[in-house]
Image (cartoon, rainbow, N blue to C red; front, side):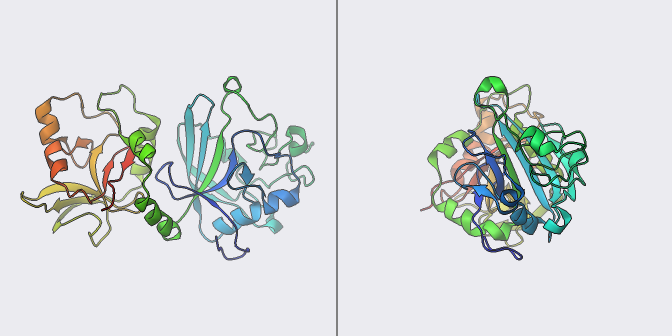
Length: 331
């Protein structure tokens, strides 16, 4: 990646989780890389982007100082249980500022907000003590971080779990990229859709008493999206819609009258026809054949488009299940 202020560097782009488009700035999952490092290593980065690694404070600063980024913390234990914390703003200072955690806020997600207390703290390593504790927190816990005066919590500390009895032990810190920065990657993905991911994306029709983690995230992201307005123009596909705004449109189809659809333009490059959306359990999906044939719910909320309408959609168009993405093969 070519970013002003630093030499080009390799990044890992995460496109499967939470809508995709994330630069991974830290990955730990098996303890194979030693994170008890000095200032130089944390400044420049270490490990391998195809395994465990730390991207580097200099690179993270270059990514965030011109524009505040989103930050996502994803935790997964060895039993497959997942939790996340999403921050709407994240930025760190320069080396002359000791890479101070200058901005972090706008928390949401299934993890409690334990990061906001670190705001304003400088980065500490075993050989550079910037914390406000009488001891060196990095030496004490064998890991660098933006430590609080009480040496509270670090994703870089020793004692990394190696089995499910040790609790959550899979950590990802990701910084949201602008659309134009990863648009080319998304276009390549559209041409090589992963069939295993397709299978995982098909959600159950049986009702659930509690929304899933993905549904909770959908609610979080929904808070920030623009007001949806009904569009009067008739379109041939969401991909061809010119304004690139998510909302309601009238879709023309062969051998049938036009009908309303919801076009999703924010996720995975846009151009999606949403055929199902579930996020708060407000609509009962335990329905009969007629309902699933004709469709039910409200396109501005939870809904099922209807099997008859899905059948009429051109097989070359991209369609989306809310809570998971489904991409029809390109012809």
